[in-house]
Image (cartoon, rainbow, N blue to C red; front, side, top):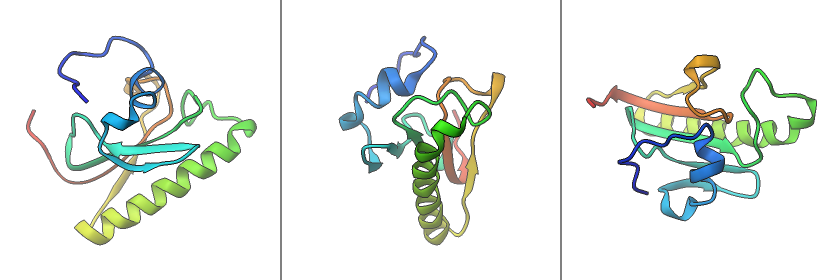
Length: 117
């Protein structure tokens, strides 16, 4: 997926990633969750997991999001376990508020050094 130009919308996942999953380096793809290698990685290993149904963020998730959250965190746990086993360490991160560039819940699973940009 070509990400050389800056995305100017507010939901990269609904607008670009989910409908164009075939253009991503997929880690996981099912009816509820998409996980792929970040298109512009910040760390040596940088995977993003996102629910396919729109949920704004972790802090806005509600009871009717439970099944999607369970599916998301099951995938995040499996990927994080694999990254930890393969690389010796892993971190799991989600951004909120002004830190959240794309207004769609997404989780970063990462390991290794920060890449120079």
